[in-house]
Length: 420
Length: 74
Image (tube, chains in turn red, green):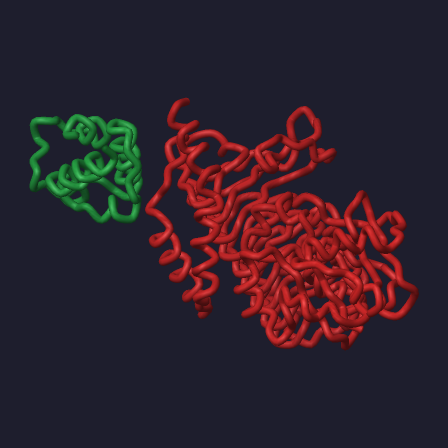
């Protein structure tokens, strides 16, 4: 039996978060969607299927697991949709052959070798189509992540669920200053080894658990409200960390943050508010960058997805910020803003546009091409080297692929903004 | 072309000489440089490779670069 975690066509509605990573590597809570699926099955041979342009990078990152290798489909398999938020799910590798769908998307398919062998398909996409035709499907109701705001919406519950799997409740393995306080049930707090909570910090687990991972440092005058997880080697600089924050590894966080996911290796060091947002890797939010997550008329927030404004059905939605994007001091992000990857947002006056195409500079209320791909990649390499991380050759190649992929959209917005 | 430079960098057209450096002599910072490239593209209806365009240091070299790009377009 082999477990296969796959991306379906849903990755496009999760742009810009998924430009540089497959859907199953998105975070919700402390861990990625894939990590939640994997921990359910323990030690099992796993393979992955991703869109073509991610394949070289994912082969590098997920090695020795097979990626996009159709030869793994020669045995009993359990296919699991990488958008599945696998919380409190009971699913076993063994069991009857079945295909479960949710709103037309395959959630999982448990297939016997005989069925797998009977399917002739050149690509995994074709394979899935054949599965739907050959095996009777049943509709189930699960949480499939469809839009970026779904990750944020489910984040507090996901942190709580992850805490059950990853924490040693009540253990303080790192340093906890006598001048700091846990204001609530101590068993809802875990401070891992080499983590440090300095004086005058309040950990408030009354509404949810708090996980402070190895090497993380919480500096004085920080207030951390659960549910919250702070990743390895991250720093909290006197911040108000409010309900529902996931902070990945090697982040620096200050100011006021609430119900957001900061994937990892990103900085929001200074004052300013970040709420109901997803921030990808290598992002830097300049001092006083602030995002709106609630409209003044309390109406639903609309977000630009695939060129169309989409009603989120939610009144609290912040910003979705792609990898390597940077904001200047004093940047204001509108409610439901989507900023692509590798952008440079420079405040002029007022709020930023609600959609910012990848690889652009926004300056004096207009989009520009900026200094071009080569310069942007060099800047990204500099930023990564500051954290002792090297951009791989495959990552660099992927940047070039994405630069081409997003060119039409970028050209359109640059032209449109010049005409205004 | 000098009209575009004068407008974008807010200098007198008569003061713009071929040997002047955009950054050192005309005060073009990184933002102004990017806006200048965009202004050239719009003025001459061309598309320039931004990396190559921003390597051009002087007014004279910019004239050469843009002339070449316009000719390539024909």
